[in-house]
Length: 106
Image (tube, rainbow, N blue to C red):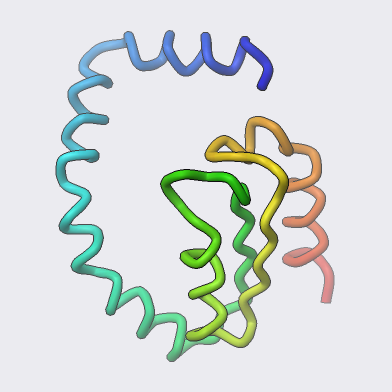
């Protein structure tokens, strides 16, 4: 991963009360989990075109979590990249290309 991305992230965290905001989000994660049934119902009801790109080695968002989208949404496309949690940092050009391919073509 390019070091400038880490330094930029840290510089942004050091502004104002961003650290407290991130901590509040982290500590409130249990409420996010409670909403999962609603998220899943949304995907079952809408079958909205979805592109799920995750890092295969992400310790937080694991491959089974990505694959779960396909159970509720036949229009979900899942790709697991050879990377970890920061897939967008390491594969930005590829991910941008895939977004264009999936959502800008018919």
